[in-house]
Length: 394
Picture 1 (cartoon, rainbow, N blue to C red):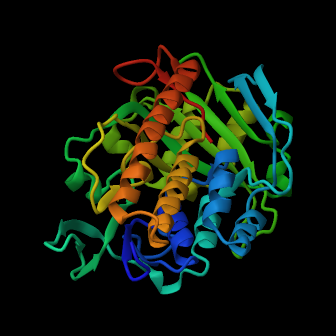
Picture 2: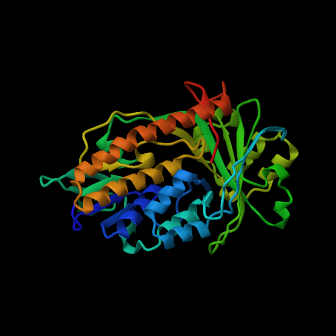
Picture 3: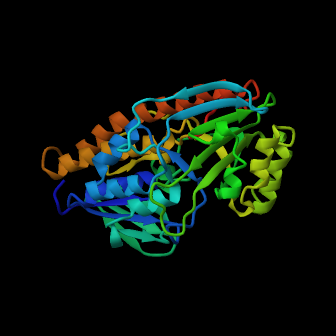
């Protein structure tokens, strides 16, 4: 791989942008194609947990200035993980020592994405939906877009998430399993009045609350170190349950407006501790949206070529254990290291891609297995369809 070769990235999420940062500021020609029309279009969640591996990957991928921006606009550090019954009786509380101000422990998804766009300029093209690709006779990759037009590069990286068009073409046999659990995300803006509603045990870190029916909720505050323009501190409130427990079909759940989803969540916790019910009652109704809990099914290694995959596009990660973003960041750091080695002339491009895939594939799917094992402890026998479930949120 020479410094004249070009890398195309499909998907401007966490992993795709981290990879672009690593390549761009080291002089590699890279372009990111993202189907969202703007950086703030998508509803995917709110708070993202960043662990030690995620911190190391970010330091590897980002310039010192961009890393500092991510850290400065992250949530205030916290070292608490708690688990409680729906009547707020403590099941487990853990404190993690060694958390310093130099570390990032949680980020707001939108603030994080904005920081990762820093310095990328016109290397990121929004409103461009990649629909397919073909490998040319010369070994390059030509991509096509739903909006029209084509582009060509020496490597295509599919970082386009769970619905990856790149994966569908490269690995049509790859499956994604529906875990049978639905998550309704929302948040409550933190003001002087709403801060007073927070039970003391939920004021810090991430806390999981569950009842005996297999319905659980995650609560986690995001208090910005340095608040980005237009942002406000908030409490992430998320409800996880089967459609049966929620009392609505998927068709209803995924067509209801946010205000109705807020009502469904509040009703589901109607017999919980009054302080918990208050949090849903005072959440911002317009912030609610649903997602399906899904997990990628393990695939065998394939013949490496000028097309590869990253993050949820290959090992779709359920948000159990808070490992999804961190795994994507590790993918980005590993792939960037290999591609930069190729750019320095230390190995051919396809050898670099193969070396990345040998690390990424087992690590990604082993992480999914660990995530699902963890979930069984939380949902037990009321878990996802086809087997026991397991989940903690980031």
